[in-house]
Length: 405
Image (cartoon, rainbow, N blue to C red; front, side, top):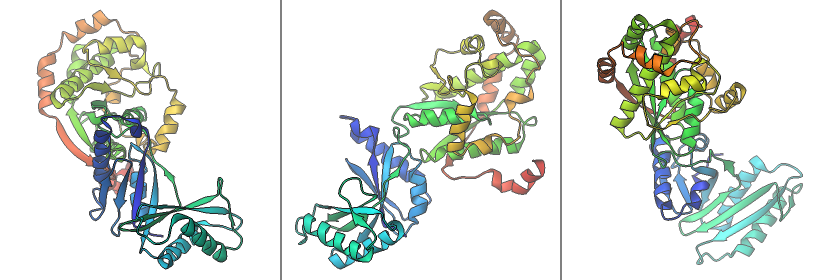
């Protein structure tokens, strides 16, 4: 059935003290961004809960969006009816027809904030419970742990009925923990790392390196679509595409094969740090998992991290691949991540990269290239795209992509 309002309950942010108001305001803003294309929806953030008035929008579609917004512990779809017993009975009957099955138990729980309404809570519980039993004689009333609790809220502007509690994404509202720069590849790990960082309230900007003509427009569209999946948890994300072909060509020409990967990663990190400094980022995030590939040994991490003192956060560092894949499937990025479009991390990958690169050698080989000049030209070519929840990029060329798979 179609509901008229969604009631949003808070989780961890409800424990906040003096800054609770800021957390709730941020969550309200994120909800509005997530529901941007539902123009008729109105969001009302309050101290104890947020009310989302649907004004005719699909309740199922809105619930699907809200379930992915961090900071929401759970939510309940509500039906607003006129302030009369007849209207309450009619609305309750419609809801129970969809939910109350034979032999299931239920109870009525009434709250009356409008004390002028003539029916008190005990009378409402008793009369509405009796009405439900008459229409569903195979059901039973159970006061403790019933299968369904039908809640009746009597407010000044109407009576609201709800009987479902749907789990949300939990965590903290995105943006309450500052801004991070996510080094987003087209693989499985980095979207999961971004998701975990966002769950702790980090506003994540996606930094993606691309190397035309070595990487295709499909690979770029794939990274943007991954960002669209992640935008569902905050409403929108900024996608920064950084041209990297000249840097890769120069490194391949000037540096030994075994150190190509190390020097490339050092340059990627330098560029990401420069973007963070320019755009107010407080930390760098990546999808490194310890020991998974050559660039993710501790020796490699040390040689690469050498270029900055900015914090580098690795949310999946201790996870194995199966754990990461399980989360990727939960957040609907896995099928995108395994699509076979090469990114710039693979096109110049040496057959035998150094797994334990020497820091002094890495510095020496890097001195052979014009670091400042290469960085300036790459940063001058950065393009920024504001990506909203639900935006698609690959489907624009679906037939072309299908021929490549």
